[in-house]
Image 1: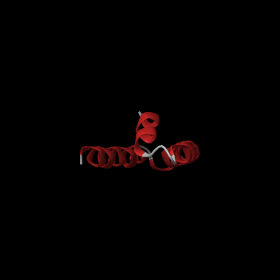
Image 2: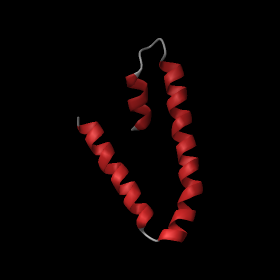
Image 3: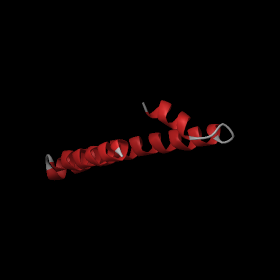
Length: 65
């Protein structure tokens, strides 16, 4: 879904740059989460899942409105 959304947000003139920035940000955040999550899970049990749950709720409202 993210790839379709990003490609539709930007006008044709800057679409390639916007897609590149969005894709880079997406993969950078995936790498960061992959590095940080095991540390958080080992130290705090199930609490990291609460963070991700809250982020998904926030995304729901961003998409809704």
